[in-house]
Length: 219
Image 1 (cartoon, rainbow, N blue to C red):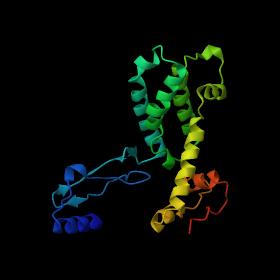
Image 2: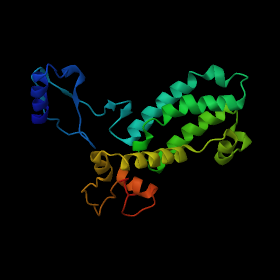
Image 3: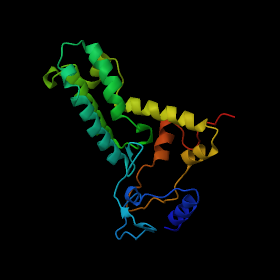
Image 4: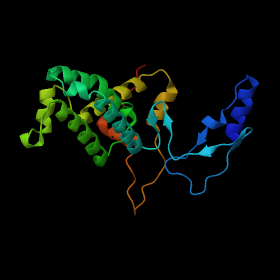
């Protein structure tokens, strides 16, 4: 609250004001059992359990992924006329990869996917692709064959590729702050009675196949 008040004071000096109706508070990773009151000069601000920032839900990967899946199905169904038309499969696949997949995988560079979320993403992607290519379950076409026919990679592969590009860009960014944030390591200790969730940093280390070091940044 003190930090927010300080920002409010400094902003007022240059004629800027914090809009109370557009300002909310939240805690990560879990909401407070008893939210504390945070008050601006214009009044108290409300608390929220999740928040959309630049198109992504910031509470968790699951929250954001489910949000993206809903938007992707909306984009997919809006093109039902095309999917059911006599257009060639190659044209349909191109439209799918350029109009629906970007909606589905937006912001995936920041996801931390466990097996359940990977399966959810895979199921969504293959359902859409099978509908476009008119492939029914009784045809017994494997996912690998499906991707080969469509000329595309699995969604897991696409997410991995985007993450690796993100790592490369960030580590070669002249902004030292960006590199520091990427290498940040939490101080949480693993509890013997429960397993610690895999962090984003853990996932990045797995992707680059290293146990303790990142690729060197460009000089």
